[in-house]
Image (cartoon, rainbow, N blue to C red; front, side, top):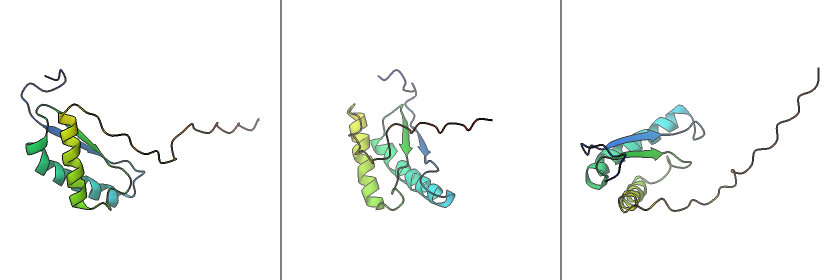
Amino acid sequence: MNPLARPDGSLRFGVTVTKKIGNAVMRNRMKRRFRALLRELLPVHGIAGADHVLIGRENGVERDFALLHGELVQALARAAAGKGDPPRKPNGKRGPKPAPKPAHGR
């Protein structure tokens, strides 16, 4: 048994969407979609005693709901099997931060 799992076997979930995704309307829409998926899928596919966290990514609001459904089922199956997420493709936005500009002397 997972040492971090709750002994009562209850399922919990969390949803987070950063401000990078869009305005509040878009972020809230994405969270509503995630919550609808989780309410449907966790009782059947969730891991007992675990916390399930979904993180909103770019283009998540535009994705087809059926596609999100299938991807979440696959992700829960991988998690139940003890496998991690498949590696994501680099988006070119990551990497070292540029050096800060020097402050002009006073």
